[in-house]
Amino acid sequence: MPLLGDSQVSLADWAFLALGAVAVVTAAASLLVRELVHTILWIATFFVALAALYFLLEAPFLGVLQLGVYAGAVTILLLFGVMVTRKRIFSREAATGLRPAPIAAAGLAAVVVGAVAVEVGGVAGLPSSPQPYETTSLSAALFGTYGPWLWLLGLVMMAALAGAIYLVREGRE
Amino acid sequence: MTLDPFTTAGLVGLSGALLGIGLFGIVTRRNFILLLVAIEIAINAAVLNFVYFAAFASNPSSGLNGQSAAIVVIGLAATEIAVGLAIVLALNRIRGSINVTEATALKL
Image (cartoon, helix red, strand yellow):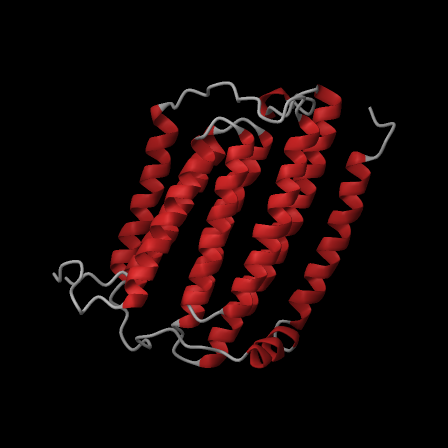
């Protein structure tokens, strides 16, 4: 097993390790801190770390989309949700006791997925480095093969918009 | 065994850990906004898988399919957040709290 700093460990490996560690730590922190605004700061860092991972995996369009949709829009939406539902923005959550059962369940899920990972880890015949794709060919696939899915996504978004307006309209008991 | 995290095992391990964190949040957190955050973490674990296996696909067309699926999933997740926040606002107005244990109006 090569030690850290060994030349066998490439720069991409280091970046992957670092970004993965940042993603796991920020995801856990966002659910464990007691101030909701801090949660949103952590989750924004998590989204940015994932976007960096997508760039590392040669998917720049996905990375930009992640930055725009998640780090931009979703973070602002969550912040808006916090702003309108609190009297004081920086008020703390009531402490929720960490019971052992959910931790055990989540740990078990992680272990099962990890075991599957070790099982499929030795898939042979795959490229050894990430394959870059042209954004033009991605758009051809997206609007060609995946055209019906995009239509469906648009319809779902329209229905969701109508539903959201219905839910928050005035004069509703 | 070499230290080679940039492999399928390393990636699926990372995404499994994120899924575990998301599930943990879904079963423990009672604040609606934290619940939405936990769901987003779990969905992002899935998107990460799509992007990774697209990058290491053996033929380009399945790789492009994977990235397209990731884009659709990102759109669906954004839609889910929008509806979820509408529910948060409605719940806050009706109950005065966004604790999901107080939303019991549909209970038999």
